Length: 258
Ligand code: FAD
Image 1 (spheres, helix red, strand yellow):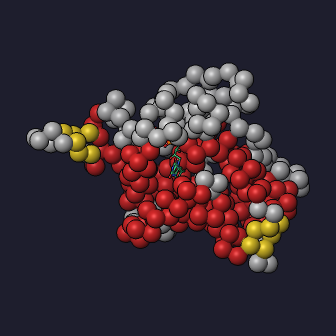
Image 2 (tube, rainbow, N blue to C red):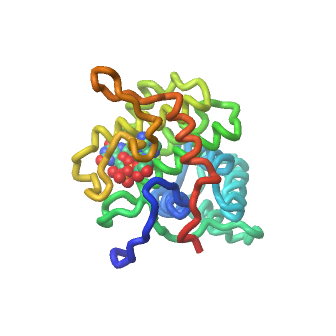
């Protein structure tokens, strides 16, 4: 809908409306392209829903739905499921109490100045940053659990196939080096900045949201240092706490939710 009114928002904050819109689009639109989900794709879906059920910083009703979908998927022992059966779970056809995944999208921090800009891909980055941060603050047993789920979700399902290929190349190159939960947070941050660098000035860039090395000095002055020769350097001891705070569940804004 291109007639939607622009929603005012703070560019330096994370919005729950974007996270929930991303779940809706991922689970009800992107996955719906697969009538049957089997083999490696089914394993990928199970791992994706499992990390969402554990680390998505969602409202209680959404968390109940994600945990319900997770336990249903873990019980599926056949080597394939139909998307239709999974969709009935997402829509809570069985009417489990207090469980729902809101229908439709309402982009806020991921609004684009044109319908083909930002939105879902912006939401995907935001969700996975939030998941790596939650896994780090809540404690996970496996440092690459979230990144592994992201890598295989993107590989099996992400609609932008060129993006999937680029991301897989970055993952193949260095994700194995991630050996702590904090380094998983930083790995995703630095790879996202590499993508920003590659895409700066490209057609996919929204002129209202230029691709920058993020966070800007305005958002996090302490994250930036300048060497004597004028070269920019990240102040790494400040970057991690910034990311932990920016994506923490207590900083997520709930504006524009029903
Ligand atoms: P996005 O890059 O989507 O970022 C969303 C928000 O995250 C930003 O608004 C900002 O608040 C925050 N953010 C920005 N940088 C960082 C960071 N380093 N760490 C943490 N938070 C940050 N498009 C292509 O054209 N070619 C590709 O190869 C490609 N590969 C992609 C791979 C993946 C896995 C994904 C999810 C998307 C990919 N895209 C690609 C889409 C592209 O990266 C952007 O998502 C899209 O252009 C929308 O950009 P945006 O301005 O909304 O900001």
